[in-house]
Image (cartoon, rainbow, N blue to C red; front, side):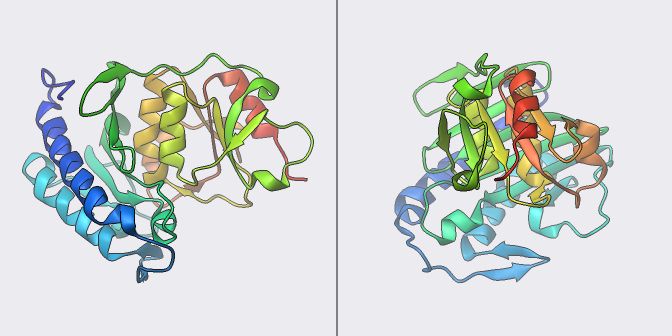
Length: 273
């Protein structure tokens, strides 16, 4: 189901749909049966990598190379000091939340963000276990699609922390003001897309330090913004911009995502007890 076929990203979206089909088969035949501690994990340039990360990487190369062979950059290839200010770039995370996969937890994603002149212009995120995908075009909206249907995504209008449903990492240690319900998938891209589709109101990571890589954020950020939501850099207490994300691919962030600016500002103020 190609939503942007009449744009210059039509061929890329078609290639990504083939990636979706391959990942669906991989999930149904292998990934859904992975249990805790069954996979060998290697470190590559500071990133945890399994055989499935490498297999999915090969799928992206096979399908996307004809469309953007000169612009593909994979998450595990990024070195300190790499800059993302090239005129054109396709930033790919073959499996987001590898730690979930290695523990048999069914919350993993694959994503691709297409960057031109420092702006994220097209993005795709696949929720592998739920076999659904999110696509967004800068200025053209964001959509969730399955094999049977598609819908435009729209963030909720929740403005207050007390009435919000949020995904909170380290939620068990929360003190003081808190959301009414706490959920956590430990996968930023998926939490962000649930916020974009109005199924969650916010996400905040309260674990110390800047942990989220540009690859974790970039694709989902466009989906969120095109759905009316907001992405924040908690360390700076400010909105996270494309310029922030694309100027240095090696930089890490402490991220909050919210359906509204008011809720995002409150999430940025939450402190650990």
